[in-house]
Image (cartoon, rainbow, N blue to C red; front, side, top):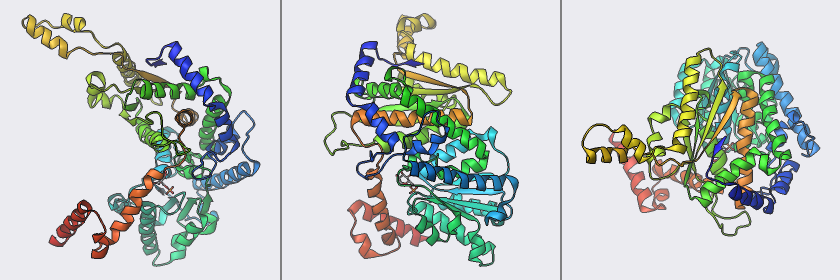
Length: 501
Ligand SMILES: O=P(O)(O)OC[C@H]1O[C@H](O)[C@H](O)[C@@H](O)[C@@H]1O
């Protein structure tokens, strides 16, 4: 259900634009596995990861499908072993009570969202913990709280070169080696790695048969469907993980079959393009009225902003239009009591996607009705607003001038766009559909803007500078001298305060 500021003529014009830009041919090229990520000369075949759940024949290369099936089998062995307590047979610790998933960005956000969203489906065999950040606070807290002998560590990194993940991995390795009285081989049994860089994982010390592959044709932010999602399978069991894949595959089928007029990802994409380029709205909010989807907006920040945060076209040419709006969000109804004031009466219009769930997984019907009523009310209030006359009719106290002044404060402009996405229930299947919906929305927008939605060069520069800063922070004066005056001053300030302790 949408309340977008688009009339039929505008929608038709946008649809015609999508057709002229060849969105269908581009989509088919993606599903076939053509190298549509041109700057890295790679395919973007995340859809092949879930093709087993599709009703349509998969156009992905047979070799890709075979690797996907084989990896799913390996994941199933591990998940089943954890569920039945027969881990020792796979060379894993005899008892596993806790799983620590170490990974950041795409190797964190999607899996973490899914594990939280599917809480009612958890088998209860293991507790899952996530360690994305390099901040040692969380790492040391986990090492204090968990029993190393019963902990399984998943090192998840497509590149196996990510600083945060490797530092946390090394800290956990030292913790496990100490718990095994210096026996590195015994400690290695506690690790499983997921990476496209298998050799680096082996060099780190993960036994080769504990390394699950991913591939250069899966982008990090599209990777929860791969072995990167092993933690999901450990939390909910492999059959539920396959239901998640199936849900995504059903959205893939819809995306492949439906004409643009009925195609949900295309329609979401067109509404977004209209809001950004025709109406000039600089941001866009995703508000889930479901606590278990509290990380949805964070996952979508990466899916949308890393994919479409580009300032040149895929061919290097200049862009005609602005691209991705700033995506932000939170959980309703909490955020109504925080930032909704600005959404209703602020000077910037912020289009909103409201995501709700019709049937809850609990028996507190009154709570759930109130939750849904709030969702519906906010979408209506944004759209309809309140006129000055209505506000004036409500203002009873004071003289005419005071009532008039109050009425102005209490006027809502309305005419603020939103879409409402309702899931029948929050299940592995519907979650899969929801996440694939946004993936394909991004694909269509990338196609219309002419940008490569599958690379992310913009994250490199900061990483390079951080590596260069490390020796300077450690006191290498020569390294420090190479930086700009602000960075130099900050390094010196940090050093001075360290010495002052
Ligand atoms: O999975 P990894 O190779 O460790 O990468 C983790 C993340 O790091 C990078 O900075 C990229 O911006 C992300 O797209 C990626 O998901």
